Amino acid sequence: MSRPIFFVDEMLNDLAVALRLSGFVSICKKWENDEALVSEAKASNGFILTSDKPLAERCEKGGIGAFLVPIKMDKKEKLVLVLKSAGIKEIYPETICTVCNGALEKAGKDKVVGNVPDTVLETFSEFLVCPDCKRVYWQGSHWKRIKAFLEEVSKEIAGI
Ligand SMILES: [Zn+2]
Image 1: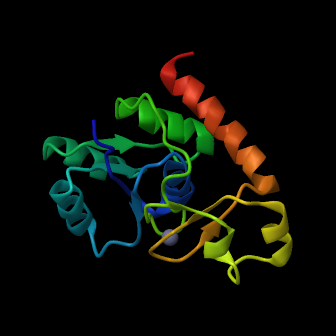
Image 2 (image 1 turned 180 degrees about the vertical axis):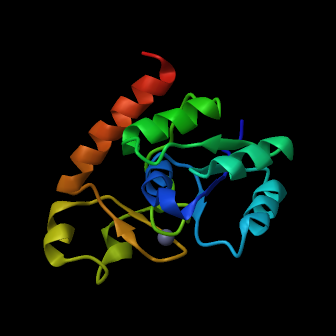
Image 3 (image 1 turned 180 degrees about the horizontal axis):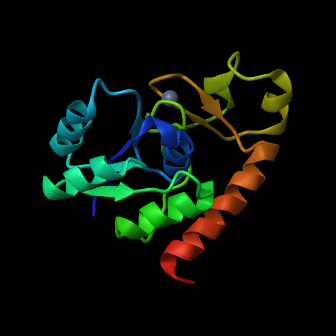
């Protein structure tokens, strides 16, 4: 199964970032109007994620996959709800740029010299680079927290 693309309501930006961390392209921006959002999602065969009930209902009637996501849920609950609703049982950490949705590529020290602080170069030898926005990722201290978060999500969607 190819990975679905998500079209995310601007109000759910935290969910869009969490989906990218999980390896799913998630477009989150201000669309001109609901019609523009719907037609873009339809063209890519994607899912719309929104907190707007009328919009979700209209999508459903129009045959477009849309999930209503309560804005008050915490980030993990939102992510698990969406993945389960979309029938996704597996996530793909470290594959999608959390900023721009680019497909991350593995890189050694030589590729990132000058783009990361020297202390990082001394500590880490493996990096991920986004070919689109040039952002460099490494498994710094924040990574442990992200990894734990994704492991919990992974278990919940697999039903463990
Ligand atoms: Zn990027």
